[in-house]
Image 1 (cartoon, protein in one colour):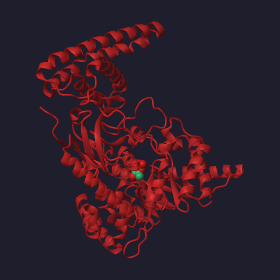
Image 2 (image 1 turned 45 degrees about the vertical axis):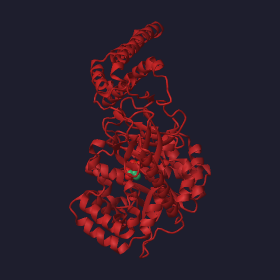
Image 3 (image 1 turned 180 degrees about the vertical axis):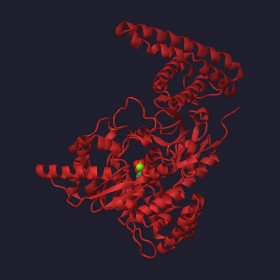
Image 4 (image 1 turned 90 degrees about the horizontal axis):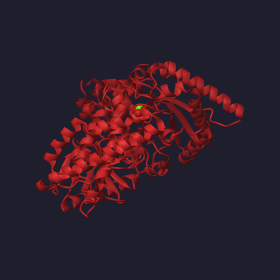
Length: 584
Ligand code: PEP
Ligand code: MG
Protein backbone atom coordinates (compact mmCIF):
# COMPACT_ATOMS: atom_id res chain seq x y z
CA UNK A 1 0.00 0.00 0.00
CA UNK A 2 1.49 3.34 -0.99
CA UNK A 3 1.44 5.84 1.84
CA UNK A 4 2.34 8.97 -0.03
CA UNK A 5 -1.26 10.04 -0.47
CA UNK A 6 -2.94 12.46 1.88
CA UNK A 7 -4.31 10.96 5.05
CA UNK A 8 -6.32 12.64 7.82
CA UNK A 9 -6.35 11.58 11.45
CA UNK A 10 -8.85 13.07 13.88
CA UNK A 11 -8.22 14.03 17.48
CA UNK A 12 -9.21 16.68 19.98
CA UNK A 13 -8.04 20.28 19.44
CA UNK A 14 -6.41 21.56 22.64
CA UNK A 15 -4.23 24.46 21.54
CA UNK A 16 -5.15 26.63 18.55
CA UNK A 17 -2.92 27.29 15.57
CA UNK A 18 -1.62 25.62 12.43
CA UNK A 19 1.71 23.83 12.25
CA UNK A 20 3.25 22.66 9.00
CA UNK A 21 6.48 20.76 8.76
CA UNK A 22 7.90 17.32 8.76
CA UNK A 23 6.79 14.81 11.34
CA UNK A 24 9.01 13.45 14.08
CA UNK A 25 7.72 10.63 16.24
CA UNK A 26 9.25 10.52 19.68
CA UNK A 27 8.51 8.72 22.86
CA UNK A 28 10.09 9.78 26.10
CA UNK A 29 13.69 10.08 25.11
CA UNK A 30 13.70 7.42 22.43
CA UNK A 31 13.52 8.96 18.94
CA UNK A 32 11.73 6.86 16.38
CA UNK A 33 13.53 5.41 13.37
CA UNK A 34 12.63 6.53 9.89
CA UNK A 35 9.72 4.62 8.36
CA UNK A 36 9.93 3.38 4.77
CA UNK A 37 7.88 0.97 2.71
CA UNK A 38 9.43 -2.32 1.77
CA UNK A 39 8.74 -4.71 -1.10
CA UNK A 40 7.51 -8.28 -0.48
CA UNK A 41 10.89 -9.47 -1.73
CA UNK A 42 12.60 -7.59 1.11
CA UNK A 43 10.75 -9.17 4.02
CA UNK A 44 13.22 -11.99 4.49
CA UNK A 45 16.29 -9.78 4.45
CA UNK A 46 14.59 -7.32 6.82
CA UNK A 47 13.83 -10.08 9.29
CA UNK A 48 17.40 -11.41 9.00
CA UNK A 49 18.69 -7.91 9.73
CA UNK A 50 16.52 -7.81 12.83
CA UNK A 51 17.68 -11.25 13.97
CA UNK A 52 21.30 -10.26 13.66
CA UNK A 53 20.63 -7.04 15.62
CA UNK A 54 19.04 -9.16 18.33
CA UNK A 55 22.05 -11.47 18.40
CA UNK A 56 24.45 -8.53 18.60
CA UNK A 57 22.39 -6.97 21.39
CA UNK A 58 22.37 -10.27 23.23
CA UNK A 59 26.16 -10.46 23.06
CA UNK A 60 26.44 -6.91 24.34
CA UNK A 61 24.09 -7.59 27.22
CA UNK A 62 26.00 -10.73 28.28
CA UNK A 63 29.25 -8.79 28.12
CA UNK A 64 27.76 -5.99 30.19
CA UNK A 65 26.39 -8.42 32.71
CA UNK A 66 29.82 -9.98 33.13
CA UNK A 67 31.50 -6.62 33.59
CA UNK A 68 28.99 -5.40 36.16
CA UNK A 69 29.13 -8.70 38.01
CA UNK A 70 32.89 -8.37 38.19
CA UNK A 71 32.76 -4.74 39.34
CA UNK A 72 29.70 -4.66 41.60
CA UNK A 73 28.48 -8.17 42.23
CA UNK A 74 25.73 -10.52 41.11
CA UNK A 75 22.79 -8.51 42.47
CA UNK A 76 23.56 -5.45 40.35
CA UNK A 77 24.31 -7.60 37.33
CA UNK A 78 20.92 -9.33 37.56
CA UNK A 79 19.30 -6.33 35.92
CA UNK A 80 20.71 -7.57 32.62
CA UNK A 81 18.84 -10.85 33.02
CA UNK A 82 15.66 -8.82 32.81
CA UNK A 83 17.00 -7.04 29.70
CA UNK A 84 17.77 -10.38 28.12
CA UNK A 85 14.27 -11.62 28.87
CA UNK A 86 12.69 -8.55 27.27
CA UNK A 87 14.89 -8.92 24.24
CA UNK A 88 13.23 -12.18 23.23
CA UNK A 89 9.85 -11.61 24.90
CA UNK A 90 7.33 -13.97 23.26
CA UNK A 91 4.48 -11.45 23.26
CA UNK A 92 6.54 -8.75 21.63
CA UNK A 93 7.83 -11.13 18.99
CA UNK A 94 4.35 -12.43 18.18
CA UNK A 95 2.95 -8.92 17.79
CA UNK A 96 5.97 -7.86 15.76
CA UNK A 97 5.55 -10.69 13.25
CA UNK A 98 1.89 -9.83 12.80
CA UNK A 99 2.39 -6.07 12.40
CA UNK A 100 5.41 -6.55 10.14
CA UNK A 101 3.43 -8.80 7.79
CA UNK A 102 0.51 -6.35 7.70
CA UNK A 103 2.36 -3.06 7.38
CA UNK A 104 5.22 -3.83 5.03
CA UNK A 105 7.41 -1.21 6.65
CA UNK A 106 11.08 -1.53 7.51
CA UNK A 107 11.49 -3.76 10.52
CA UNK A 108 12.94 -1.18 12.94
CA UNK A 109 9.96 1.14 12.44
CA UNK A 110 7.53 -1.68 13.21
CA UNK A 111 9.61 -2.91 16.14
CA UNK A 112 9.73 0.61 17.56
CA UNK A 113 5.94 1.02 17.35
CA UNK A 114 5.25 -2.40 18.89
CA UNK A 115 7.64 -1.83 21.80
CA UNK A 116 6.24 1.67 22.40
CA UNK A 117 2.76 0.22 22.76
CA UNK A 118 4.08 -2.49 25.06
CA UNK A 119 5.76 0.15 27.25
CA UNK A 120 2.58 2.17 27.41
CA UNK A 121 0.67 -0.86 28.67
CA UNK A 122 3.37 -1.42 31.28
CA UNK A 123 3.13 2.18 32.44
CA UNK A 124 -0.47 1.60 33.40
CA UNK A 125 -0.36 -1.78 35.11
CA UNK A 126 -1.07 -2.00 38.82
CA UNK A 127 2.11 -3.82 39.69
CA UNK A 128 4.67 -1.16 40.74
CA UNK A 129 7.56 -3.50 39.96
CA UNK A 130 6.47 -3.96 36.35
CA UNK A 131 5.85 -0.22 36.01
CA UNK A 132 9.35 0.51 37.17
CA UNK A 133 10.75 -1.80 34.44
CA UNK A 134 9.63 0.44 31.58
CA UNK A 135 13.02 2.13 31.52
CA UNK A 136 14.68 -1.26 31.01
CA UNK A 137 12.49 -2.05 28.03
CA UNK A 138 13.31 1.34 26.56
CA UNK A 139 16.99 0.62 27.10
CA UNK A 140 16.70 -2.67 25.21
CA UNK A 141 14.77 -0.97 22.41
CA UNK A 142 17.48 1.64 21.98
CA UNK A 143 20.19 -0.98 21.85
CA UNK A 144 18.40 -3.00 19.21
CA UNK A 145 17.74 0.12 17.13
CA UNK A 146 21.36 1.19 17.42
CA UNK A 147 22.44 -2.24 16.23
CA UNK A 148 20.28 -1.92 13.14
CA UNK A 149 21.32 1.64 12.41
CA UNK A 150 23.83 1.16 9.55
CA UNK A 151 21.20 -0.38 7.31
CA UNK A 152 18.88 2.60 7.57
CA UNK A 153 21.28 5.19 6.31
CA UNK A 154 19.33 8.30 5.53
CA UNK A 155 18.31 9.14 1.99
CA UNK A 156 16.76 12.39 0.87
CA UNK A 157 13.36 10.67 0.98
CA UNK A 158 13.52 9.25 4.43
CA UNK A 159 15.67 11.74 6.30
CA UNK A 160 13.69 13.19 9.12
CA UNK A 161 13.83 16.85 9.86
CA UNK A 162 17.35 17.11 11.30
CA UNK A 163 17.62 20.57 12.82
CA UNK A 164 14.57 21.91 10.99
CA UNK A 165 11.57 22.82 13.12
CA UNK A 166 9.15 19.91 13.10
CA UNK A 167 5.73 18.63 14.16
CA UNK A 168 6.12 16.29 17.11
CA UNK A 169 4.05 13.11 17.44
CA UNK A 170 4.18 11.06 20.65
CA UNK A 171 2.07 8.59 22.53
CA UNK A 172 1.82 11.07 25.39
CA UNK A 173 3.77 13.98 26.78
CA UNK A 174 4.19 14.61 30.49
CA UNK A 175 3.70 18.22 31.61
CA UNK A 176 7.44 18.35 32.36
CA UNK A 177 8.26 17.21 28.78
CA UNK A 178 5.92 19.86 27.44
CA UNK A 179 7.41 22.59 29.60
CA UNK A 180 10.77 21.77 27.99
CA UNK A 181 9.54 22.12 24.40
CA UNK A 182 11.09 24.96 22.46
CA UNK A 183 8.43 26.61 20.25
CA UNK A 184 11.18 27.59 17.80
CA UNK A 185 11.89 23.92 17.13
CA UNK A 186 8.58 22.22 17.84
CA UNK A 187 5.96 23.77 15.56
CA UNK A 188 3.14 21.75 17.06
CA UNK A 189 2.51 18.45 18.76
CA UNK A 190 0.05 15.63 18.51
CA UNK A 191 -0.46 12.74 20.93
CA UNK A 192 -2.38 9.51 21.07
CA UNK A 193 -3.36 9.99 24.74
CA UNK A 194 -4.24 13.24 26.48
CA UNK A 195 -7.18 15.50 27.30
CA UNK A 196 -8.09 19.16 26.96
CA UNK A 197 -7.66 20.04 30.63
CA UNK A 198 -4.44 18.14 31.28
CA UNK A 199 -1.52 20.36 32.24
CA UNK A 200 0.15 19.25 29.02
CA UNK A 201 -2.65 20.93 27.05
CA UNK A 202 -2.62 24.00 29.31
CA UNK A 203 1.13 24.38 28.83
CA UNK A 204 0.80 24.03 25.05
CA UNK A 205 -1.58 26.97 25.06
CA UNK A 206 0.79 29.08 27.20
CA UNK A 207 3.69 28.28 24.94
CA UNK A 208 1.55 29.10 21.91
CA UNK A 209 2.23 25.66 20.39
CA UNK A 210 -0.68 24.24 18.34
CA UNK A 211 -1.66 20.86 19.77
CA UNK A 212 -4.04 17.99 19.10
CA UNK A 213 -4.50 15.05 21.49
CA UNK A 214 -6.38 11.76 21.48
CA UNK A 215 -5.50 10.57 17.96
CA UNK A 216 -6.08 6.79 17.90
CA UNK A 217 -3.17 4.61 16.65
CA UNK A 218 -0.98 7.65 16.12
CA UNK A 219 2.36 6.11 17.07
CA UNK A 220 1.61 2.97 15.09
CA UNK A 221 0.50 4.77 11.94
CA UNK A 222 2.50 7.99 11.79
CA UNK A 223 5.47 7.95 9.48
CA UNK A 224 8.61 9.72 10.58
CA UNK A 225 9.85 12.25 8.10
CA UNK A 226 6.67 12.62 6.12
CA UNK A 227 5.18 16.07 5.73
CA UNK A 228 2.37 16.96 8.08
CA UNK A 229 -0.15 19.69 8.74
CA UNK A 230 -1.48 19.99 12.27
CA UNK A 231 -4.74 21.87 12.63
CA UNK A 232 -5.01 22.91 16.28
CA UNK A 233 -8.36 24.62 15.64
CA UNK A 234 -10.21 21.53 14.51
CA UNK A 235 -8.09 18.72 15.93
CA UNK A 236 -6.81 17.21 12.69
CA UNK A 237 -3.43 15.78 11.70
CA UNK A 238 -2.92 15.54 7.95
CA UNK A 239 -0.11 13.33 6.72
CA UNK A 240 1.35 13.84 3.25
CA UNK A 241 -0.84 16.89 2.55
CA UNK A 242 -1.40 17.74 -1.09
CA UNK A 243 -0.27 21.10 -2.44
CA UNK A 244 -3.90 22.30 -2.31
CA UNK A 245 -4.26 21.29 1.34
CA UNK A 246 -1.06 23.11 2.30
CA UNK A 247 -2.19 26.20 0.38
CA UNK A 248 -5.56 26.08 2.13
CA UNK A 249 -3.92 25.93 5.56
CA UNK A 250 -1.44 28.66 4.73
CA UNK A 251 -4.34 30.93 3.80
CA UNK A 252 -6.21 29.94 6.97
CA UNK A 253 -3.15 30.72 9.06
CA UNK A 254 -2.87 34.20 7.52
CA UNK A 255 -6.57 34.84 8.07
CA UNK A 256 -6.52 33.67 11.70
CA UNK A 257 -3.42 35.72 12.47
CA UNK A 258 -5.08 38.77 10.94
CA UNK A 259 -8.21 38.42 13.04
CA UNK A 260 -6.11 37.71 16.15
CA UNK A 261 -4.12 40.90 15.54
CA UNK A 262 -7.36 42.84 15.14
CA UNK A 263 -8.55 41.48 18.48
CA UNK A 264 -5.32 42.33 20.29
CA UNK A 265 -5.68 45.91 19.09
CA UNK A 266 -8.63 46.18 21.49
CA UNK A 267 -6.32 45.41 24.39
CA UNK A 268 -6.69 48.79 26.08
CA UNK A 269 -10.47 48.59 26.19
CA UNK A 270 -12.02 47.33 29.44
CA UNK A 271 -13.86 44.02 29.66
CA UNK A 272 -17.27 45.56 30.16
CA UNK A 273 -20.67 44.34 28.99
CA UNK A 274 -22.92 46.45 26.76
CA UNK A 275 -24.96 47.42 29.84
CA UNK A 276 -21.94 48.48 31.87
CA UNK A 277 -21.07 45.44 34.00
CA UNK A 278 -17.30 45.29 34.53
CA UNK A 279 -15.33 42.05 34.79
CA UNK A 280 -11.64 41.89 35.65
CA UNK A 281 -9.88 40.02 32.87
CA UNK A 282 -6.56 38.61 34.02
CA UNK A 283 -4.00 36.16 32.70
CA UNK A 284 -3.10 32.61 33.67
CA UNK A 285 0.67 32.30 33.61
CA UNK A 286 2.99 29.32 33.81
CA UNK A 287 6.36 30.70 32.74
CA UNK A 288 8.50 33.70 33.63
CA UNK A 289 8.98 34.61 29.99
CA UNK A 290 5.28 35.39 29.62
CA UNK A 291 5.70 39.05 30.70
CA UNK A 292 5.53 40.24 27.11
CA UNK A 293 2.50 38.11 26.34
CA UNK A 294 0.73 39.53 29.41
CA UNK A 295 1.34 43.08 28.19
CA UNK A 296 0.41 42.28 24.59
CA UNK A 297 -2.86 40.65 25.61
CA UNK A 298 -3.87 43.67 27.70
CA UNK A 299 -4.51 41.49 30.76
CA UNK A 300 -5.30 43.31 33.98
CA UNK A 301 -2.56 41.53 35.83
CA UNK A 302 -2.25 37.84 36.61
CA UNK A 303 -5.21 35.95 38.04
CA UNK A 304 -3.34 32.67 38.40
CA UNK A 305 0.40 32.22 38.46
CA UNK A 306 1.01 28.46 38.60
CA UNK A 307 4.27 28.67 40.52
CA UNK A 308 5.00 24.94 40.38
CA UNK A 309 6.57 25.12 36.92
CA UNK A 310 9.08 27.69 38.18
CA UNK A 311 9.64 25.95 41.53
CA UNK A 312 10.08 22.41 40.28
CA UNK A 313 11.19 22.93 36.69
CA UNK A 314 14.87 23.30 37.53
CA UNK A 315 15.37 20.12 39.53
CA UNK A 316 15.80 21.65 42.97
CA UNK A 317 13.54 24.08 44.78
CA UNK A 318 14.81 27.70 44.59
CA UNK A 319 15.51 29.31 47.97
CA UNK A 320 13.52 32.22 49.41
CA UNK A 321 15.74 34.96 47.96
CA UNK A 322 15.67 33.46 44.47
CA UNK A 323 11.90 33.15 44.65
CA UNK A 324 11.58 36.71 45.94
CA UNK A 325 13.60 38.11 43.01
CA UNK A 326 11.49 36.13 40.55
CA UNK A 327 8.14 37.15 42.08
CA UNK A 328 9.25 40.73 42.51
CA UNK A 329 10.05 41.02 38.80
CA UNK A 330 6.59 39.77 37.85
CA UNK A 331 4.91 42.15 40.31
CA UNK A 332 6.91 45.09 38.95
CA UNK A 333 6.23 44.16 35.32
CA UNK A 334 2.48 43.95 35.96
CA UNK A 335 2.12 47.10 38.09
CA UNK A 336 -0.31 48.73 38.70
CA UNK A 337 -2.26 45.49 38.27
CA UNK A 338 -2.32 42.66 40.79
CA UNK A 339 -0.48 39.35 40.48
CA UNK A 340 -2.12 36.42 42.24
CA UNK A 341 0.49 33.85 43.20
CA UNK A 342 -0.90 30.39 43.59
CA UNK A 343 1.38 28.47 45.94
CA UNK A 344 2.98 25.18 44.87
CA UNK A 345 0.47 22.75 43.39
CA UNK A 346 2.70 19.69 43.13
CA UNK A 347 1.31 16.20 42.57
CA UNK A 348 -1.56 14.97 40.39
CA UNK A 349 -0.33 14.95 36.80
CA UNK A 350 2.22 17.65 37.55
CA UNK A 351 5.80 17.47 38.61
CA UNK A 352 6.28 15.59 41.85
CA UNK A 353 7.53 17.57 44.83
CA UNK A 354 10.12 14.98 45.60
CA UNK A 355 10.91 11.72 43.89
CA UNK A 356 8.44 9.31 45.36
CA UNK A 357 9.75 5.80 45.78
CA UNK A 358 6.58 4.45 44.33
CA UNK A 359 4.01 6.18 42.18
CA UNK A 360 0.80 6.92 44.08
CA UNK A 361 -2.15 4.82 42.98
CA UNK A 362 -4.57 7.76 42.83
CA UNK A 363 -2.32 10.80 42.54
CA UNK A 364 -5.20 13.27 42.06
CA UNK A 365 -6.66 12.16 45.39
CA UNK A 366 -3.32 11.91 47.08
CA UNK A 367 -0.41 14.06 48.11
CA UNK A 368 -1.21 17.12 46.04
CA UNK A 369 -1.49 20.90 46.33
CA UNK A 370 -1.88 22.37 49.80
CA UNK A 371 -1.42 18.93 51.36
CA UNK A 372 2.17 18.86 50.11
CA UNK A 373 2.83 22.41 51.34
CA UNK A 374 1.33 21.85 54.78
CA UNK A 375 3.39 18.72 55.27
CA UNK A 376 6.56 20.72 54.53
CA UNK A 377 5.92 23.91 56.56
CA UNK A 378 9.49 25.22 56.39
CA UNK A 379 9.60 24.96 52.60
CA UNK A 380 6.06 26.37 52.38
CA UNK A 381 7.01 29.35 54.53
CA UNK A 382 9.92 30.19 52.22
CA UNK A 383 7.41 30.61 49.42
CA UNK A 384 5.03 32.62 51.60
CA UNK A 385 7.78 34.98 52.74
CA UNK A 386 9.01 35.40 49.16
CA UNK A 387 5.50 36.37 47.99
CA UNK A 388 5.03 38.71 50.97
CA UNK A 389 8.34 40.44 50.25
CA UNK A 390 7.43 40.80 46.56
CA UNK A 391 4.18 42.47 47.60
CA UNK A 392 6.19 45.49 48.78
CA UNK A 393 7.00 46.27 45.12
CA UNK A 394 3.53 46.50 43.64
CA UNK A 395 0.29 44.64 44.03
CA UNK A 396 0.37 40.96 44.93
CA UNK A 397 -2.05 38.42 46.33
CA UNK A 398 -1.63 34.82 47.38
CA UNK A 399 -3.94 31.84 46.96
CA UNK A 400 -3.87 28.19 47.80
CA UNK A 401 -4.67 25.13 45.69
CA UNK A 402 -6.80 22.12 46.53
CA UNK A 403 -8.17 23.38 49.83
CA UNK A 404 -10.86 21.01 51.12
CA UNK A 405 -12.05 22.78 54.27
CA UNK A 406 -11.59 25.16 57.16
CA UNK A 407 -8.81 23.23 58.95
CA UNK A 408 -6.40 23.83 56.10
CA UNK A 409 -7.39 27.50 55.88
CA UNK A 410 -6.69 28.04 59.56
CA UNK A 411 -3.35 26.25 59.32
CA UNK A 412 -2.39 28.40 56.32
CA UNK A 413 -3.36 31.58 58.14
CA UNK A 414 -1.26 30.62 61.17
CA UNK A 415 1.76 30.04 58.95
CA UNK A 416 1.15 33.35 57.16
CA UNK A 417 1.00 35.12 60.52
CA UNK A 418 4.32 33.52 61.51
CA UNK A 419 5.86 34.67 58.23
CA UNK A 420 4.67 38.23 58.76
CA UNK A 421 6.19 38.27 62.25
CA UNK A 422 9.48 36.89 60.93
CA UNK A 423 9.65 39.54 58.21
CA UNK A 424 8.93 42.29 60.71
CA UNK A 425 11.73 40.96 62.89
CA UNK A 426 14.06 40.91 59.92
CA UNK A 427 12.99 44.44 59.01
CA UNK A 428 11.81 43.35 55.55
CA UNK A 429 8.90 45.22 53.99
CA UNK A 430 5.66 43.66 52.74
CA UNK A 431 2.12 44.76 51.99
CA UNK A 432 0.14 44.54 55.23
CA UNK A 433 -3.06 44.31 53.15
CA UNK A 434 -1.96 41.51 50.83
CA UNK A 435 -5.14 39.72 49.76
CA UNK A 436 -5.43 36.08 50.70
CA UNK A 437 -7.61 33.71 48.70
CA UNK A 438 -8.25 30.04 48.12
CA UNK A 439 -9.04 28.03 45.08
CA UNK A 440 -12.42 26.37 45.07
CA UNK A 441 -11.75 23.15 43.24
CA UNK A 442 -12.79 20.47 45.71
CA UNK A 443 -16.55 19.93 46.19
CA UNK A 444 -16.31 20.04 50.00
CA UNK A 445 -14.84 23.56 49.77
CA UNK A 446 -17.63 24.67 47.41
CA UNK A 447 -20.25 23.28 49.80
CA UNK A 448 -18.62 25.11 52.72
CA UNK A 449 -17.95 28.33 50.81
CA UNK A 450 -20.19 30.44 53.08
CA UNK A 451 -18.01 29.48 56.06
CA UNK A 452 -14.72 29.76 54.19
CA UNK A 453 -15.70 33.21 52.92
CA UNK A 454 -15.45 34.52 56.49
CA UNK A 455 -11.75 33.67 56.58
CA UNK A 456 -10.39 34.73 53.19
CA UNK A 457 -10.59 37.76 50.89
CA UNK A 458 -11.44 36.03 47.63
CA UNK A 459 -12.15 32.76 45.88
CA UNK A 460 -10.90 31.53 42.54
CA UNK A 461 -12.86 28.64 41.08
CA UNK A 462 -10.61 26.05 39.47
CA UNK A 463 -13.15 24.52 37.12
CA UNK A 464 -10.70 21.92 35.84
CA UNK A 465 -10.41 20.25 39.21
CA UNK A 466 -13.89 21.14 40.41
CA UNK A 467 -15.25 19.25 37.39
CA UNK A 468 -12.84 16.36 37.92
CA UNK A 469 -13.68 15.95 41.59
CA UNK A 470 -17.43 16.62 41.30
CA UNK A 471 -18.14 14.17 38.50
CA UNK A 472 -15.36 11.80 39.61
CA UNK A 473 -13.78 11.87 36.17
CA UNK A 474 -9.98 11.91 35.89
CA UNK A 475 -9.04 15.05 33.95
CA UNK A 476 -6.16 13.35 32.13
CA UNK A 477 -7.70 9.98 31.37
CA UNK A 478 -8.69 10.06 27.71
CA UNK A 479 -10.95 7.02 28.15
CA UNK A 480 -13.38 9.13 30.15
CA UNK A 481 -12.70 12.49 28.52
CA UNK A 482 -16.21 12.47 27.00
CA UNK A 483 -17.59 12.63 30.53
CA UNK A 484 -15.50 15.65 31.48
CA UNK A 485 -18.26 18.25 31.21
CA UNK A 486 -17.84 21.48 33.18
CA UNK A 487 -21.46 22.35 32.39
CA UNK A 488 -22.71 19.39 34.42
CA UNK A 489 -25.54 20.82 36.57
CA UNK A 490 -23.73 19.55 39.67
CA UNK A 491 -20.70 21.69 38.81
CA UNK A 492 -22.72 24.76 37.82
CA UNK A 493 -24.75 24.68 41.03
CA UNK A 494 -21.58 24.45 43.10
CA UNK A 495 -20.16 27.43 41.24
CA UNK A 496 -23.35 29.37 41.93
CA UNK A 497 -23.22 28.43 45.60
CA UNK A 498 -19.58 29.58 45.81
CA UNK A 499 -20.26 32.92 44.13
CA UNK A 500 -23.29 33.45 46.39
CA UNK A 501 -21.00 33.35 49.43
CA UNK A 502 -20.53 37.02 48.64
CA UNK A 503 -16.78 37.60 48.34
CA UNK A 504 -15.03 38.41 45.01
CA UNK A 505 -14.90 35.21 42.99
CA UNK A 506 -12.83 34.58 39.90
CA UNK A 507 -12.95 31.69 37.44
CA UNK A 508 -9.46 30.52 36.52
CA UNK A 509 -10.07 27.06 35.02
CA UNK A 510 -10.08 26.38 31.28
CA UNK A 511 -13.85 26.87 31.18
CA UNK A 512 -13.20 30.64 31.31
CA UNK A 513 -11.59 30.52 27.87
CA UNK A 514 -14.42 28.61 26.20
CA UNK A 515 -16.17 31.34 24.22
CA UNK A 516 -19.43 29.37 24.26
CA UNK A 517 -19.53 29.46 28.06
CA UNK A 518 -18.64 33.07 28.80
CA UNK A 519 -22.34 34.14 28.98
CA UNK A 520 -22.86 31.50 31.67
CA UNK A 521 -19.86 32.59 33.75
CA UNK A 522 -20.86 36.24 33.48
CA UNK A 523 -24.45 35.34 34.36
CA UNK A 524 -23.33 33.35 37.40
CA UNK A 525 -21.80 36.57 38.72
CA UNK A 526 -18.05 35.87 38.47
CA UNK A 527 -16.14 39.07 39.25
CA UNK A 528 -13.08 38.02 37.31
CA UNK A 529 -12.07 35.65 34.52
CA UNK A 530 -8.48 34.52 34.32
CA UNK A 531 -7.43 32.81 31.08
CA UNK A 532 -4.30 32.00 29.06
CA UNK A 533 -2.82 35.04 27.31
CA UNK A 534 -3.43 33.59 23.84
CA UNK A 535 -7.18 33.39 24.36
CA UNK A 536 -7.59 36.55 26.39
CA UNK A 537 -8.30 38.89 23.44
CA UNK A 538 -11.17 36.63 22.35
CA UNK A 539 -12.64 36.63 25.84
CA UNK A 540 -12.42 40.43 26.05
CA UNK A 541 -14.21 40.74 22.71
CA UNK A 542 -16.90 38.31 23.88
CA UNK A 543 -17.55 40.14 27.16
CA UNK A 544 -17.78 43.47 25.35
CA UNK A 545 -20.56 42.06 23.17
CA UNK A 546 -22.64 40.56 25.97
CA UNK A 547 -25.56 42.04 27.84
CA UNK A 548 -25.33 41.32 31.56
CA UNK A 549 -29.08 41.15 32.13
CA UNK A 550 -29.47 38.70 29.24
CA UNK A 551 -26.65 36.56 30.72
CA UNK A 552 -28.36 36.51 34.12
CA UNK A 553 -31.74 35.57 32.67
CA UNK A 554 -30.17 32.75 30.64
CA UNK A 555 -28.23 31.53 33.70
CA UNK A 556 -31.42 31.38 35.79
CA UNK A 557 -32.77 28.91 33.22
CA UNK A 558 -29.46 27.03 33.13
CA UNK A 559 -29.58 26.54 36.90
CA UNK A 560 -32.91 24.77 36.48
CA UNK A 561 -31.70 22.55 33.63
CA UNK A 562 -31.28 18.84 34.21
CA UNK A 563 -28.28 18.03 32.06
CA UNK A 564 -24.99 19.44 30.83
CA UNK A 565 -26.02 19.55 27.15
CA UNK A 566 -28.97 21.86 27.84
CA UNK A 567 -26.80 24.19 29.91
CA UNK A 568 -24.11 24.35 27.21
CA UNK A 569 -26.74 24.93 24.52
CA UNK A 570 -28.37 27.78 26.48
CA UNK A 571 -25.05 29.55 26.93
CA UNK A 572 -23.85 28.84 23.41
CA UNK A 573 -27.04 30.22 21.86
CA UNK A 574 -26.56 33.51 23.67
CA UNK A 575 -22.87 33.53 22.75
CA UNK A 576 -23.67 33.01 19.05
CA UNK A 577 -26.36 35.67 19.14
CA UNK A 578 -23.90 38.13 20.72
CA UNK A 579 -20.66 37.48 18.80
CA UNK A 580 -21.32 35.08 15.93
CA UNK A 581 -18.13 36.24 14.21
CA UNK A 582 -15.96 34.47 16.82
CA UNK A 583 -17.45 31.12 15.78
CA UNK A 584 -16.33 31.32 12.13
C1 PEP B 1 -8.13 24.28 37.95
O1 PEP B 1 -8.09 23.21 38.56
O2 PEP B 1 -9.14 24.66 37.31
C2 PEP B 1 -6.96 25.17 37.94
C3 PEP B 1 -7.03 26.37 37.42
O3 PEP B 1 -5.79 24.70 38.46
P1 PEP B 1 -4.87 23.62 37.70
O4 PEP B 1 -5.38 23.49 36.28
O5 PEP B 1 -3.47 24.13 37.74
O6 PEP B 1 -5.07 22.38 38.50
MG1 MG C 1 -6.53 22.85 39.98
